[in-house]
Length: 268
Image (cartoon, rainbow, N blue to C red; front, side, top):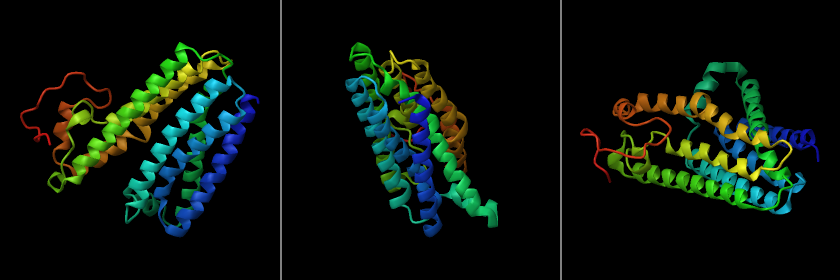
């Protein structure tokens, strides 16, 4: 199947998914579900590309498995932590709802459909891995190794943060243990690293260069748009120790060596 046809079907499916989720938030009066929609939209994209991409079966199956596992883990994590375990709408969407006033629902419809566009944008770098005719080789193994390191890093970062927050004594404090001593956003770093896996997997594809868009676009989104700016703003407004954390800890790329700051909270 041609590249425009592959992406066109992904766009249609993502638009329908986000429309359904918009109706759900209309009923629940909670737009937080939009965070989950993007991840599961990527899951659907991976399944579609694996079935219709037309590349080497082994390479395409491996790529489909990796993307599906990543998207399912991320979607499940977001569903449990931002929807199921929450008792009210995320503060970001409460502010959006208040700012839009009587135009809130049309505004949210556009916002939800924008997430469908993001599914399309992040599906484009995956296409080479599913269309490459190249047989399984050492480059493919390298892609799998990068994916495994990235996923394990993200899981460890999430678990360390959950463990820190589970302690009532840490309320109002910033996690500065484990990977969080090396970077203020290790979860985002490993999310970004994960996109490098599809570059070696996409070798041999006619549009191989598209795979490079993955880490480039994800970095721009995390660094300047959807990830770090909001997280940092929220942390500064709720945690007195965060400004010092910003001064002593790299924002994105983890440092290899760490030193204990004299004012840092004890490691638990």
